[in-house]
Length: 161
Image 1 (cartoon, rainbow, N blue to C red):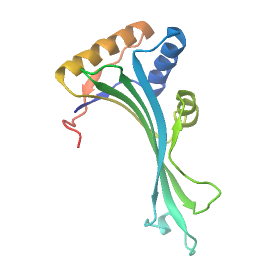
Image 2 (image 1 turned 135 degrees about the horizontal axis):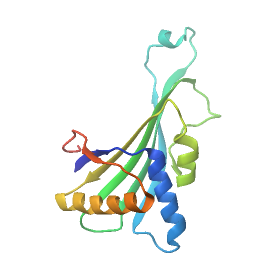
Image 3 (image 1 turned 60 degrees about the vertical axis):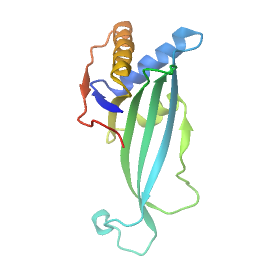
């Protein structure tokens, strides 16, 4: 799949999505799915974080993702808003399990987009040149409908593994 970076904020994509969901009243022409996953790193430079005792800590980070996909069999694409951030060292406890979970669009927006230290990226993956055209047409309709000027740019990643 070809990957393209988009010059649009995650907040703007979520705003479009919520407006579409509220205005349509019937079935949408795309699917949306959001979730968050956590990564725990046991081996890290504890001294860099001021941890000198023998307590059990993990270096914790998260990735929250919102995917938007068309309801099509051909010319398939995926628009993705990805929010990633390191939460730093966390003491291992059972009280606060960091397990993957599904999110609503509202939870994704409320819990992850306002984070000032997070890295937010917006990309689209297309499986064929026709899929890119299909996405560009959909994207142009959304820009026009929601009065936003944004551009589609190759991200430098030609193929996904």
